[in-house]
Image (cartoon, rainbow, N blue to C red):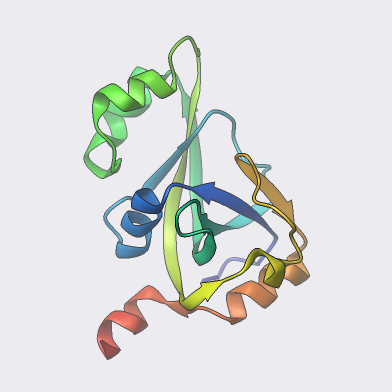
Length: 150
């Protein structure tokens, strides 16, 4: 994934509408209640029901953790979600984490979780070994390459 060394990958469950926005390049941040480990360099995107498949990946360009209202002020223009659902998601929480989306990779066809050696989708995310992450990434193409060939 880019020029940065590839570390662990996180398999992340994301609602299909948000997964599509990430892969299309319009959603540039993924909001979570807790940050990823510092050695995670990429996210494998698992689109939840009704898709139920691995559809792509993105390089982690950074993480930003701060109060939810501050995070919203900074990233609302690339959030891919309306303000009210965002605030409901973080209701009662002092901190919010935004995972910044770097280079995007798209699976040419949806991949089953079994391709990653996973039996069921994680509630939020789970860590994968670098070997599994590299195997998944090898099955994908950079989004800009797909756009040029479409």
